[in-house]
Image 1 (cartoon, helix red, strand yellow):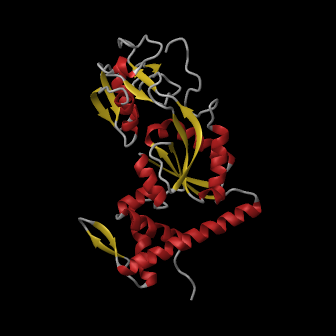
Image 2: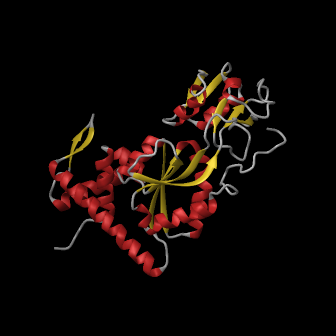
Image 3: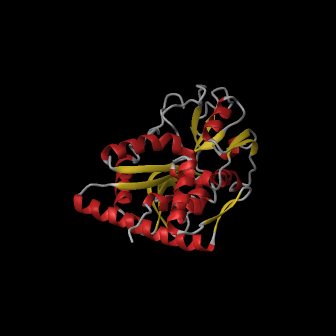
Length: 315
């Protein structure tokens, strides 16, 4: 009996099974919700099984049959990926899908240029991206929703491997008229009595606050945000200083207001930006190709969207 379902339908099935709703699955795979619904209905009709229980309030939940079909779908998709990898190796052409995660902190700055240059080198690779905080990226790796993540060496899990690319020291961000903006360096003791705008992401916030805790200090956190662009805007508007390891090419907030960047002396270890993946993922050709591209394009002297040598004149 010929097969009448497609790998695309199986991909949508896995997405709905993982996400628990058609809307979330559609966002994950980058198609419309009706496309997902139609594909699932066609798959159920072909198999003669109800794969999901539809509940308006709770979304979709897998039936017992659905759980078994989902497990098999994962296996089939994994084998199909290996077939693509074999073909790529034989032909010498990197092709297939690369599902890339990136930390929210620097995704908008680093990822666009890095992805563009990679696709220019490997036009037959279909790159799909997601952004998230550290916990979301780790969970996405474990659920095989992404193949690898570009992130920091914060709270790294033992079941994943991390390849460092660059080391990024911490800087204090200040408005130009802040009383500390003219200093050459700053220490936590200098900052403790001034209002702080905290980039409040999992693990990142603990990292920034540890600079003060290690010296028995408590910062005056006046504002919290999960968005680095909002943080930069609040600092430029005079709501307080902040700390970050990312220094974009432009020393301005999104609204054009200027910022000052001052090195934070001796208080925090530099963060390492690198690639996080599950063990064994580096054997897949698309992942190997992207890792090699990152090694060539994300270095101490070449960082997409970031300053490699802080200007000496104004900071």
